[in-house]
Length: 424
Length: 153
Image (cartoon, rainbow over all chains, first blue to last red):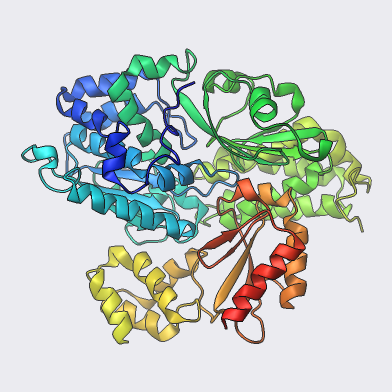
């Protein structure tokens, strides 16, 4: 399969405009500049591209809505706050081919008439921030950013790298915008949506690194060609991140429609140390945990949704049978407890209490009442938390209980079949 | 304060750049933290209440308000590292450095902390020292890495 996003990985000097152009770069931007704005958006709609950050909102529709907004200035913002455990795909784009992202944002700026853009990169990626910064400077020198881009009078666009400082919640788009403004990264009330009222209360087009990076290819080779690489319901390819107890860990660009089993066993080489797969945690910490029986599900937004799973960011954490479902859950819940921003009660207190309850299971002091309380609290958080973090934090809990209820009940009786939990 | 002023000027004395300013200042501090006098100075210069500035820096996990070691050793504890042996890695580091998470070694060189995922899941279990990430760690590799940092002293 010819690759879309990773075609140039490792083959070009990441911050060299010349090498990017020699490898087919900036064709998309040139083509866009010869097109009507609405036609360019139409190509993106045809591509069946869904937001790659996790929410899977159709990008063409998002851009069409943003284009229709009359107010300005408009801002282009990129979410490079890749904080989802088990996700390291944006790291590869940013450090190996940052120009595909820069070109994607520049195409967006051309269509939307935006003059300023921000690439928000997590604070932990300091070395990568420098690469992207250098790529931006080189693009400016070569006339691909800055004033009168490619000689087009009035097409001005500048880009700036902004660093995060260690807060998972800043991956939520309104929290991210708050953070760019130098504030604590707590989510805003929605509506107004970010497309109307985003950065500095202005219309803002915000996409994930991977989403923007698909745009140049879509314009260059056409939305239909991109769409055909995937399935009827999910166009193109996806960067999947394999980690955990799997032989060949890493990022794989796969066409939509491949099954999880093919990804884990054919590309990933299967589980390490000859052990058995216990469950897969898909899409990040707030994704579902499910056993081997669901591995033949196709990686496609529609098929996964039918199976009650979300693709999220594309993180695939493989967990083998030496691990305890309850202990794994404890690790997940501690993550959310720490990363909850504290703005709303269901999430702030809920994550705290869930850790407290799961702790009782790992210590062997839990009762049936605790088990029921845990399930009911999870539902409360799901329905009443302010943002996606609190709403989805209980997902691993609910899915682990769904598939491994027996293990939870054993813990109530004081036994951990894997011996991981040190019972009192 | 000259240093602080210089950084603030470079960022145009703008409230919007508070996080970027503080990240730079923390790097300059030599203690991997933000001294109270610097925070006060920034608050005055940017015309912000001190409480507001502290609310920002204490929100983000990368900032420290108490002096930390020259090198902050971060052990990832997120799921991909957790299932590939982060626990034993932490135990080894505790032994090697003779400190518990959150503590600084007596010589002030290392501070050991547990952190959330920093995107090194392909080489888990992983640690991060300053900007550098180390993965696929074994006890031997780990003590070798720690020693190279010690020798730089």
